[in-house]
Image 1 (cartoon, one colour):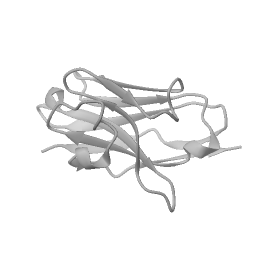
Image 2 (image 1 turned 30 degrees about the vertical axis):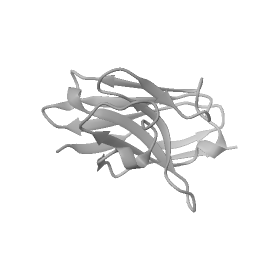
Image 3 (image 1 turned 180 degrees about the vertical axis):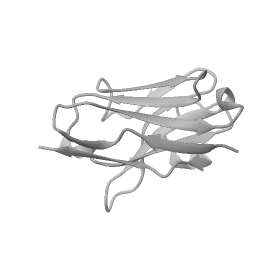
Image 4 (image 1 turned 120 degrees about the vertical axis):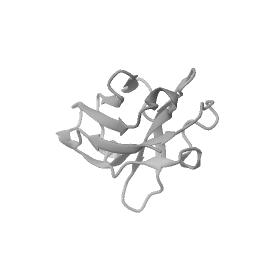
Length: 126
C-alpha cells in the first residue's frame, strides 16, 4: 500500500510554468509505476503522463513537448514539470500509483492505477 501527497499547484498565466510533486509514502517506491492525471469540472479524469517501474514513459498527445514526468527513487517523489501552460490545462491534478510495470497501452488509463492522491489544483488564465 502507498500514500500519495501532491503539491506544487497554483495559478499562472498562459505561457507560464509549474512543477508538481508527489510524495509517495512506501518503502517499495521503486516497484510502483506512477502517473499524473487531471480532471476539469464536468470532464472525466484523463491521463497526462505516466512512468513505468520498469521501462517506459508515456504522455498524452495534448502535453507532449510541454510536460515532463520524472521520478526520484531516492526521494520517493514523482514530478511533473509543466511548461508553456495553456488555459485548457486547468484542472485538478492527481498522482496515481500501481504496484506493477505498465506498458504504453495502459499507462494513461485511470483504471490501470490503484492508489490515488487527493489532488492539487492548477489554474491557467489567458
